[in-house]
Image 1: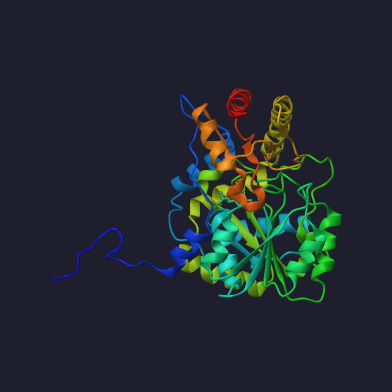
Image 2 (image 1 turned 180 degrees about the vertical axis):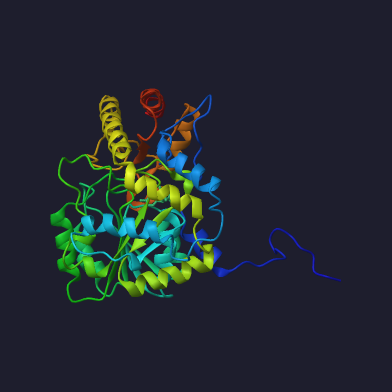
Length: 389
Ligand SMILES: Cc1ncc(COP(=O)(O)O)c(C=O)c1O
């Protein structure tokens, strides 16, 4: 007789990698806005993709561009991205070292899985974007979270300790969930810490076009001492309101891009040809759209900041980029419980603990939602928090 299969003894054992991700993962699926719920939970622009981009995709399909693309990406797109990055890096960037990826997510996966061996130590800020820990765990690496300083910038002393013998440091700039923009000085300090080591850096600059500091944004790849050791990860999702298109790219040292390409091709094959044709138009012709949306986010940031500042018991940080506020609340409750109570009051936000244990006591609110949703969502948040006092 075959053994009885129960929920406790599943018939199909799954890979250890799945259990490792499940153990590490703090990610939760968040609801979109619906009649009775305002969502400030999603990192999802409410803008339509620029018209030129959607038209380019349609034209590409009509022209029969429905066949496989080269494995590293369309040559014209890689060339345009290399030109753009030459400006970002302030040094020549070769198209040969660009890999077009299935969004930022697959770029991060390809680079992390292409670098990390089981047992390798990978340093990440705490709190930070939760995907990094999941991917490091998938690779069998050891996640080393380093608490941020009280102003949510890096604590350089703690970072110096943690980076000893680290294989990799992964961070985002501007930060998700903090909205912090790491300055040139901070990046130079990081370069100094890493001087003489073989530690690799992944700089996820998904929100680099959304910087409200008034200073020019500084990319890690423009810093001596980081340029040579950094894999730059970018996506079209945020700057161009192209979340559903699933396109992004990597640039970095040739050996690391070749390794990432090996992983990316194994998982994904090449990226959709007509999507890359549309992405080329985004890079070449949509600078004004990026600027228009950035300006709108800056206004929404102010609407949200002002409304939040009137809520007793919330301490605001000073986000300078991306589209997130990360306030601290003064209740003695885990953020998951606060989020559940707020949900019952008709507003969805994210628990700070989702981004690391040091995020506990915070909520992450997105102002990628429209102004009306922001005003109504924060009104419900105020009611929900008052009910918990
Ligand atoms: C910091 C950061 N990096 C990468 C991504 C992933 O972007 P994509 O939609 O391109 O997969 C996100 C999405 O929220 C993000 O916040």
